[in-house]
Image 1 (cartoon, rainbow, N blue to C red):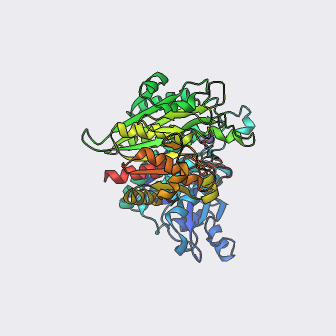
Image 2 (image 1 turned 120 degrees about the horizontal axis):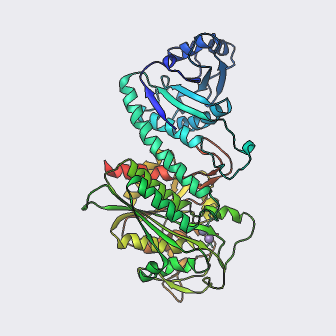
Image 3 (image 1 turned 60 degrees about the vertical axis):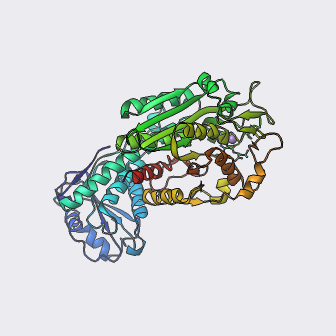
Length: 499
Ligand code: BES
Ligand code: MN
Ligand code: ZN
């Protein structure tokens, strides 16, 4: 999808649909909205005086062009009360608008940002690109019937920016937002694909393909090499599977040989049956998305490469299935991670932390000075935070602050949860250095305490995304299915380290 930014007035842009925005209390449309009103034969002014359009947030009116005008239709979008207008609400409105435009017949669209005085132009450009590219995402490749694959689509998008200075800033934002949104759609594609079509082998191939496109360096660590590296914790999860495990490593060397390296580590369980501690049948299909963390870090480093951020970044994605079989790991087994620490596997369904242990140990052994892991780790985080915010844990207040600010810029919400030493008591093992479960209380925290053992004194943050990686109903920039969150938070964080 191409998004062009022009300096001219909206009325001068040839497009099927012209979009203007109005707040509450508008008596007479002005500027671009006045031109749109003339094209619609005065319908906007009539709607306003008749109280048929109030300018409420997200309100949409679709009007035919009756007079002279370059468009076939005019769409009026309500901006809502000035006090409640934020960057987030604007991004959400753009996401919802993108689908309304598609339903209204699609075609090319020109949007006037004239009335948008509450958002910085660059952030507005970013949000409009994200709104449209993310909002129009669909995963329908496996529908073979044409009726199940709607043909209507939004075509070329033009943003009428007003002044040349605003246009330049909006253009910068559009470029960054487009790169991040396309990367997020890439992550969504990986997450939405069923597990038979997104095996560790296929994930590795997709990572290699991305590397070829973006100039990233890609290494796939095969089982034999993982054995040589003593990744016993990661490999213990792969024991039950017929699919060969693939430990994916990507490097973006944007910061020069002496600069520090940020590691992004993502959980890559391409299907989680629970293993011998098998899960109930209900909703087990959702476990095809248990590699969302891996998809997000692979997508993020792709965006980081495309943005040419002057930072060294490493993405690490330990990928494997978690299956029961005659060769599967059994409850009570003791395994060793590559840093030498021993783990008693109490529950084979607590496998995410086992692959992250070696993912993080590998990142540290390979020079990471900051580590962020992303994982669909615990059902308990849904109980704690629901589907609104993801859980974040960190052994470093400064790092947490940086990630929180990145999340604010990206519009992805999080909430910090604690790592008190007392919680560590729950994962003490009588036979090994630690055990992989800590009982029902504080399930997300004990999982984080387990991972913390592998981060050591390296500044580290853990993002438990188990409740926000998928969404059952479309809203704002997120259609149904995999959301690709929190990819933009990671990219904003790395960008903040670049400046
Ligand atoms: N992948 C699951 C967590 C999950 C659950 C993600 C629901 C998304 C939706 C993880 O591997 C898991 O099974 N966790 C267990 C841990 C328990 C055995 C300590 C859980 O949360 O029940
Ligand atoms: Mn599990
Ligand atoms: Zn899992």
